[in-house]
Image (cartoon, rainbow, N blue to C red; front, top):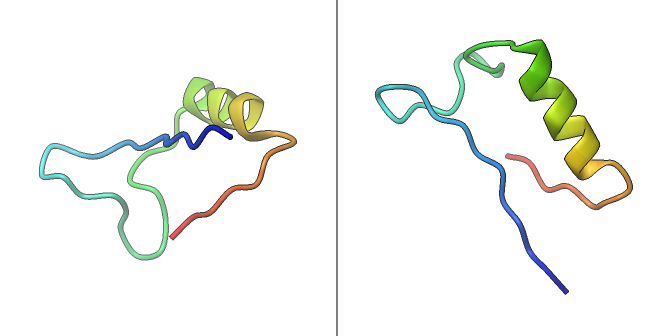
Length: 44
């Protein structure tokens, strides 16, 4: 079993702001979807 992590942080090591992502990039979201489809995902 493999355990993988995808993380993106801002300049000040922030992960999000106001219960949302700091930025929205179409290519990043497509990569996340392609990578995680069909897998269990734990977020938080």
